[in-house]
Length: 315
Image (cartoon, rainbow, N blue to C red; front, side, top):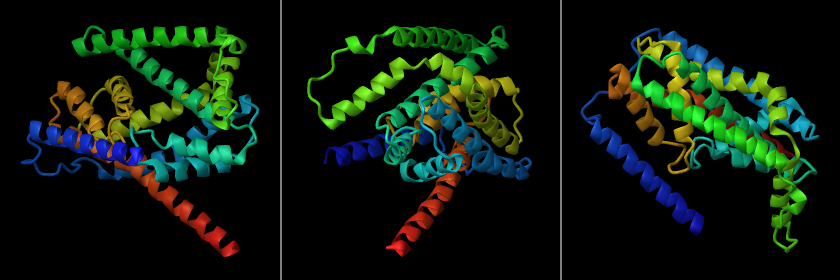
């Protein structure tokens, strides 16, 4: 009942935010903005989201798992990623399907809790990479616009805090931390997660997984740049490298279903500095969601259906 109430609340919040955005920028009176440039660029977006990003994402996860002494097939991780997007694309935040990734891998490994820890570590490193990309890119525009200077200052501060937390967590002695005395499975599960995160060097994992972490983030930003090109809008590439990570971080807030509303509002707000019409920014956000989430979710649904059908035939 609590889950249903929470889900209903998130749907209401999503609708309210969407209505506010559409009403605030008079999108009710606007026609649906369709691409005016080279629409064939959509094929790169499809290849990007169905081939390139899934490849590097699975490689990134496998690299982290190997460092946690969990060895599994690359193809299995690829399958888990696609099917998890299908089962979780309507969960809160734009990355709610991580829950299903953890669930599927936990079923296939004897190290309960460690598999979930790999996803938590992956998210920490991914967030660190996004902020790092924003910080480095914004340095090139420090003298141009006030918003870039603010983003550079904010991202630099966040990077400092994250680095401090990495060192602090590494220095913690897990044996001195007092957990609940109960030995229930749920307590042991979360204790394993905590032990895994504190016992392994996250910075070392970052160094070894660097070549897989950054391509995922960079390709997702390039996807947005290409969609803008499809609308005939050319913006300096570093601008996207500054703004898109900020938008992605905002959409991770688990307030609305799949980040709807938060993501669109952020697109409109940040790209308004380049005199981009709200309906175009809104349309780019929706098309980016379709290519980045909906298409992989459809493929994940097909894969899930095939596996269920095979299991039914075996019975």
